[in-house]
Image 1 (cartoon, rainbow, N blue to C red):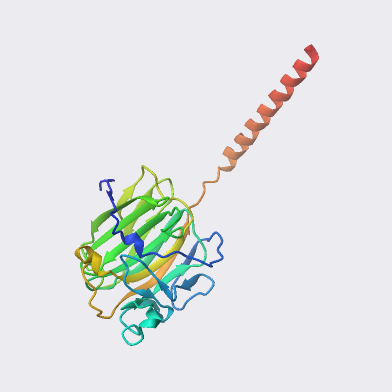
Image 2 (cartoon, one colour; image 1 turned 180 degrees about the vertical axis):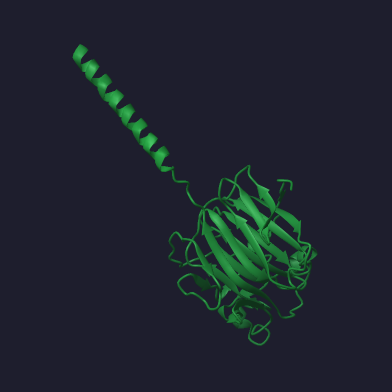
Length: 283
């Protein structure tokens, strides 16, 4: 697979993200969450938050539900059609799950079934925070409901130079569960579908900063209909069966190697002390 990525235009999928505010976070460690229910220590739901272009929906906490061992992210027009003030004047609402901690180098995995429908996008990604007014690192995977046989992978480093690549999946991502993952370790970015690598990039400015894990479904605004289609208000949902993070392991020297390194450092120190004594005696 070519390592060439096209620049992401102003109508970027990444703009589906929102500034994260008020979250107290720390460096996250490896975990595997089966999403049978919400772990309040690990996740928070975006609520009463309104995105800008190209997102047309609001985020509501009640649009995330847990049932049958899965998390469901619902996109629909309730309660917006009857009570627009509850959706910030938006015509639709959806769910967005965000980690409370940030996470670093490692492998990010989600088992999910994407939402179907024109003008609908399902996201799984990691990003550092606001895309507006601050440098942002982002690595993501996006599935458009109008053609769920294709996956878009993307990355942004320090808020500039957004890149993306479209991958043919060979299946309908809205018809069943599949495993999607990206890896940010070893100085490269790699994306996987059902445990097979589908794309990688190992050069240029790569986003390696710690970031929040984000899962969401959103409705595209009419201004980007040529790219994503037009959301007609038909209820749809994405299903997440699990989300996991496996931290990259820093290589630890073998005992023999560590002993040699220690002996080498000791020898260098002895030589320096001996040289200092010789200089002192001849002065």
